[in-house]
Image (tube, rainbow, N blue to C red):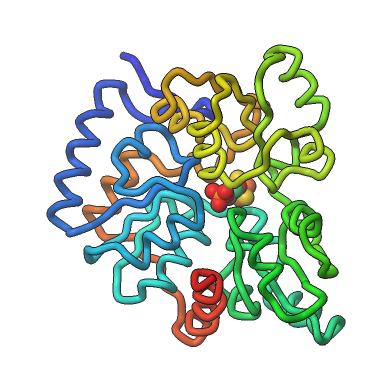
Length: 316
Ligand code: 13P
Ligand code: SF4
């Protein structure tokens, strides 16, 4: 028997089951009038059945504009919450309910309220990787694709930026505003070091280095280009160069290989795996479509305030 293993070494399903499961999911999707949104870090076999694959900003926009009654969100909890906030009339399903973003847990609404009392007059910009409660306490939301634009859009001269210190420090490079970065970080991106970049460049001397802004400042300094996951993809597509070292979660490599034939993309590190992003598998997607569970909902009094922060970002 040949098993398909995920990137953490866990056996998921028999190889011959993949196509069977994918066909079953596509049938159920029609029956339930559902759409599947998948983040760029999802497993290849999930990306291959998605209606939309994208970065956080693209998926938030897709959640607003999609037809259908049901959204199956293949990603992590804050992404499904964002979809539920933006499309309260739809049933939003998260096939792996334990798929969370540890960084989103690094700031709470209480902590943020306290920070506001310490810095009256400062604007609060929250990364989309936050809970609905934290978004509800924020002035405006941002993603990795638009953090600089969002920070520069607020009227205040000082910005409390939660929770990613690296993204906050990255935005600080492109603004005259005073950024007060929170102490959060991504367990995957914060692990890259300049030594990893040096090693990868030694192995692939002609390759350009593309990294995500969740990387540490010293890694950003080594990069040729810094962008969101979809920004990295469009850069590889449009750059005449042929070889790239990719400094973001390795799930993006599937899309890069599929959509950029002829280009060679190497992971900056083999260890860049977000275990939470890999919790969604075909069996869970199939089961969620059968049962229409687990459903993600956000209480309206929180959703209404969080929606304000997200819609301010989308309006930019
Ligand atoms: P993107 O919005 O760039 O896809 O990033 C989401 C994320 O979780 C990065 O770790
Ligand atoms: Fe969160 Fe990092 Fe995983 Fe993105 S890659 S979901 S920021 S832990």
